[in-house]
Image 1 (cartoon, helix red, strand yellow):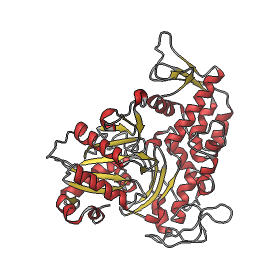
Image 2 (cartoon, rainbow, N blue to C red; image 1 turned 180 degrees about the horizontal axis):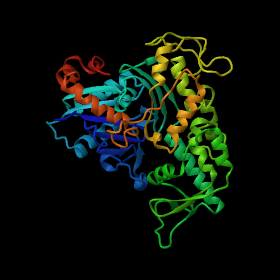
Image 3 (tube, rainbow, N blue to C red; image 1 turned 180 degrees about the vertical axis):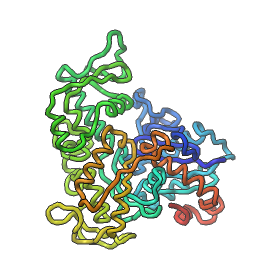
Image 4 (cartoon, one colour; image 1 turned 90 degrees about the vertical axis):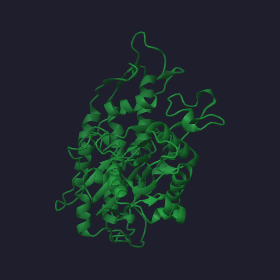
Length: 439
């Protein structure tokens, strides 16, 4: 039996047999309904009306961290047995895609559930940025994982994560989605934002006299309406044109948006647009993006590469490749912090030559071109940064599901060469065995 690759994010859980030629066959929203005395995953999965009828809405992962292991176990049971087709007594092996900064205890807990509750045949954990670069045909580079609830930055050298480079930014696709929802609400209140076609049912999007976009409609609107300008000048020019565009949602509702739609993607480069606005998402406050987190997505990445350990902070110990805890120097320039030298010059160059921008948020129109433009302008001419794209032979959604695709590639190697933790090894050493064989 082929191994199963499982990738659980803040937005969706992905699972499927290790086949890098097609999208993961099981994609489940990280949103479950738990009725009293019932399993969340079997009672309702990703229901847009979750919470009605007394059900309690629960999630397993929030901004990159597992927050409820009971939900995780129920979700895995649903995906592996009901969707993948495992049968009791005939379970296969699992490769688990792990976000950066995952505690050792979480890896042990995951292995314990899979071995003791599901009797899986084998287990292997691999870090998402390493897998994402594999999916793009790279062993070294830097990874920007723009997920639903956060954005992760890291450097990978020869197939191994540089621990000192790992940094998490508390901005993700959900914050952009919240902001566009509030933008649509404001347009609705002005009287020009939304219309329904004649004879359409009053369901789904317009409720209680106000506007409420369900998750599917919201993601569709974000993909169609939001676009990243090529640079700040292009953004200013687009923002100055009082042009309105109409978009049709899945239920037939028509929504007209003005130039404010350019603010959504721009907020990744200027986070102040998320916090200093009446349309700011309630999940983000100005205080939560103070200090290092107030820098935009490109500066966050360059700080990770040049300093080896992110923005801000004083001195600290060296990392796996000499990365210290240096901050942003003097006048706000990158590098030159007080504490460390970051990656060595040659390794900085290698990392910047393969920049992987992945995750669900990477599908925003114009984002990769803007990222390339911004990072090039921020560096001296001697450096030639490159935002890499998926190889032509990979599926169209490779960037969106990069960690899962990379996991499918790695799983075929790891399990065929017996590099994974077997059930016998787990029984002998317990959960700590997972640290002996992992990526």
